[in-house]
Length: 67
Image (tube, rainbow, N blue to C red; front, side, top):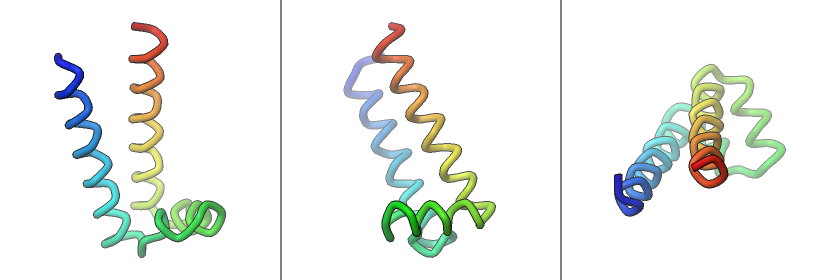
């Protein structure tokens, strides 16, 4: 896969996660670090969004360091 394709997939995933955050978690991801994490951890959809962000971060770290 080309690097541009990978970047477009990541950007699309982040936009989808942002929209899910706004509609289902009350915009807690955009609120601030401490309050936003507390709100997201208390909501099942927020926990799923955090898990997806962790998976994306893990894939990026794996792609950069263990390629």
